[in-house]
Length: 95
Image: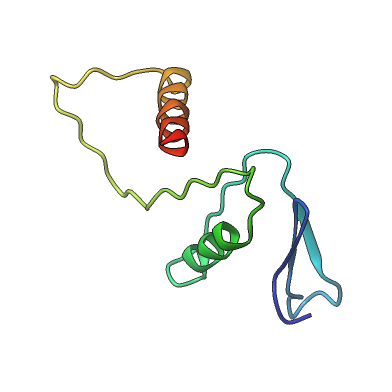
């Protein structure tokens, strides 16, 4: 198989040189893709967005090498930030 296919919530990757069979990844939870520059992470992210079911939400985050926050910026918990992000996404969908 020379292409990536999406079947329900399963990604099938092309075979690697050192393996003779395809690899599959079940996507029932959050998936983080990490790889070297030019390895196809952005292309895969765009492909997933284009082929996702309408009920699924995909968030792509660009790479950050260093984040500096001003001393005047108040930090928040991951739970609060996630809830605020999801509320904003829902508002955009409703509009």
